Each structure stands twice: as structure tokens, then as C-alpha cells.
Image 1 (cartoon, rainbow, N blue to C red):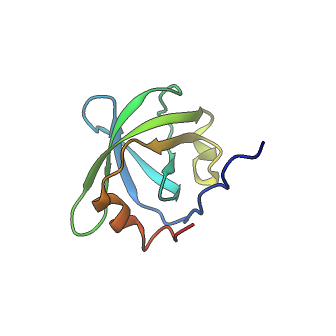
Image 2 (tube, rainbow, N blue to C red):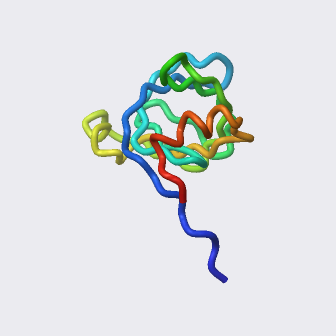
Image 3 (cartoon, rainbow, N blue to C red):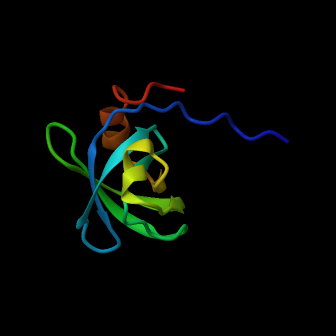
Length: 108
């Protein structure tokens, strides 16, 4: 049985602040869709961890919650390649989030 097709992704780079309590770590979006994003970062959390996110997007940072679905660690030199970081699934994304992301991540 086939699952739904993967969400279309945009490779726009946005600054992402994240953490399990306060959003104190900084990473960058490697790709982003209407359902989640890949964060390029050297500090990852284990899959299943719920994290708070702040996406730097005009006109102001947008706060949301995400769930880590995969995480890879490695050498800092791999950071620009996307070989290390985390895959995040948005948890109950708001209409505001979807509307702000529409220009970034095309509809499926």
C-alpha cells in the first residue's frame, strides 16, 4: 500500500531558533514545506522530541511547535551539505503559518 506523495519542498534558507524549552539554539532551514522542515544544525534532538521553533520571517518571527522525526550528527564541515541536522514535522500548524509559508513552499 502506497502512502501519500511527499510534500513539495522549497530550499529557501531561513534562520530558525529552536529548543525544548526556550528557542535558544540557532539553525537554518535546508528545505521547508507546508508540513515540516529540515534544520541544518550541529545540535540535534532525538527523534520523538517535541521542540519549540521560531522562524525568522517577515514581518516578525513566527513561533510554532515541531516534532523531531529524524536526526543526524556529524562533522561541522558537513553542515552546508545537509548531511547533518534534523527533520521536523510541524505540530498543529496555524493558518498564519500556512499562509506565510505558501509563497515559500508551493502547494502540493
